[in-house]
Each structure stands twice: as C-alpha cells, then as structure tokens.
Image 1 (cartoon, rainbow, N blue to C red):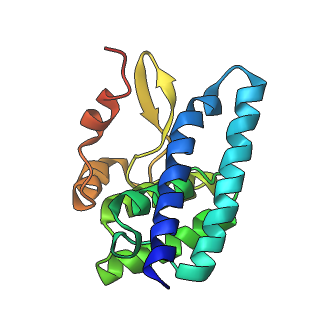
Image 2 (image 1 turned 180 degrees about the vertical axis):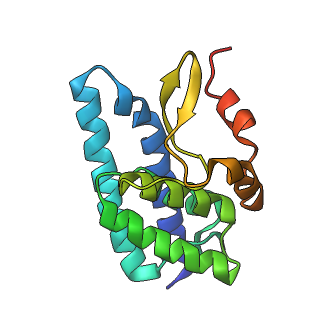
Length: 169
C-alpha cells in the first residue's frame, strides 16, 4: 500500500460519506425517485466497502484518517439491504476496537443497526423505530433497564439526550 493509494482511498471514503449525507433524506422521502436514488447509492457504496474490506480490512483512522474511517462506518451503517456487508463490517470493526484502532461508540451503533436488520433486539437503543406522541421511540432493546449504562460504557450519551436531537424544537 502506497501513501498515494491510501490518500486516494481516504478521499474516496470521504466523498462517499458526503454523497450519503446529501442523499440520506431520500430514505424516508414520499418521492419514489428519491427513495430509489438512496437505495441505489447505498447499494453501490456497500459493494465498494466490501471491496475495500477485501483489500485493506477495516479502514481505521490510523490507515485512512479519522474522516475517512468515519465515512466507512457510515457506509456500513447504511448498507441495510446488504446484511452480509454489515455483518462483515461489524466483525472487522469489533477486531479493530479490540486492537485499539477504532472506538466503541461506532461499534455500538453498527451492532444495534445490524441486530435490528436481523430482526433482533438492539442493545444500546441507538436505532429509532419511529415517533409516538411526538417522542422518538427506539426499536425494542434486549435490556431496556440497562440501556443507559451500556450506552455510557460505549461512550454514548444517555438515551433522553440522544433523542432530544430528533425532537422538534
């Protein structure tokens, strides 16, 4: 791996994450064309992340820089229709956290997202199912009474603080 190939990879991941964020509102749009554009983009990004993981393993901040590593995580988060890619990213990210080259916060979010996509209860309450009576409601949690303790261990703010950012002002 040359410095120039890693720089190009970092730039690619940052660009992919920026495109993801620009297109993300389409995920919940009433416009079928916007929904389709979102699905197409996340599938393309999931395929590319899979290729990157083939070549480099998990793209850690040490390898590609913090912004690009966060971009890789975001792409994995949004690969909802590619559970094989999410599961693989989760395994590689788990190893990176164990090695001290990635953080537990991103791992917690990806673990919850993958579990919800598998039809299982989440652990940390990071995935929101919808809004009821104006308040965000998480997908079912494995141990709701321990959720905030587990969130704290992963470096995530308490649930009430987290969902406050989704509530209308």
